[in-house]
Length: 228
Ligand SMILES: O=C[C@H](O)[C@H](O)[C@H](O)COP(=O)(O)O
Image 1 (spheres, rainbow, N blue to C red):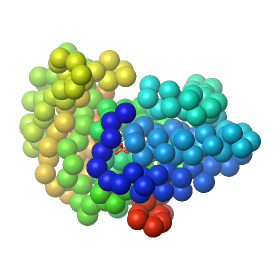
Image 2: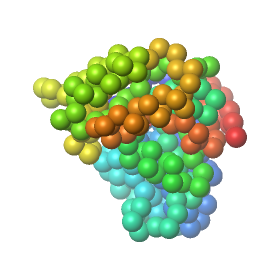
Image 3: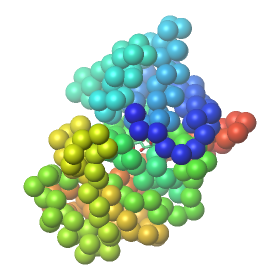
Image 4: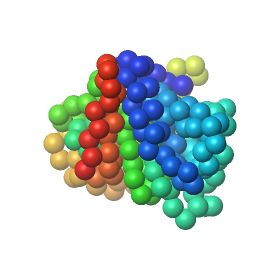
């Protein structure tokens, strides 16, 4: 699993805090990444202790981790609702996020947006006043050059994400490529989100605007919780 900067203890505190919100009978969206992994492990311990939940994974990695943790799994096809989703972020400004550092943002957005309550878990290194992290854009491989040109027209600088242990680009769980798009400070997140969504060939982008309900930031000695 990809790891990012920030203390692992802070990530663990955030993950455990969010897992503490899960009640008996709930359907839980299981996010991807090193911080969400702490929530999944904490939830697994609650399942061991008798909690009855079902998890909806957002990636191959979160499915494997949840299986290892003993969490019963389900799919969006089999549930009427997702009670709570717990997921990490690459950057958080107020309640807007950049996600997709692990290229999982397309499935994450489907699950997180559908959930009745979307709880973000993060460490302090993720918190900013304004989003400025490059925005991951998942796209159909055939549309690489046309999407890159459209991102450029929108003021962004796209870079095809290269794999680390394979020659060539990262291929997502959905068989697509990722462009990491640098926009500098993103002052109008809604406008950029709409622009990126409107580009033919874009499967999903990593700007999560107006979706998060709660942010749990693990600190050196506790957790700061912000609620809408
Ligand atoms: O695609 C990956 C996800 O959006 C992650 O939730 C995000 O990259 C944060 O990951 P981490 O908690 O490892 O920093």
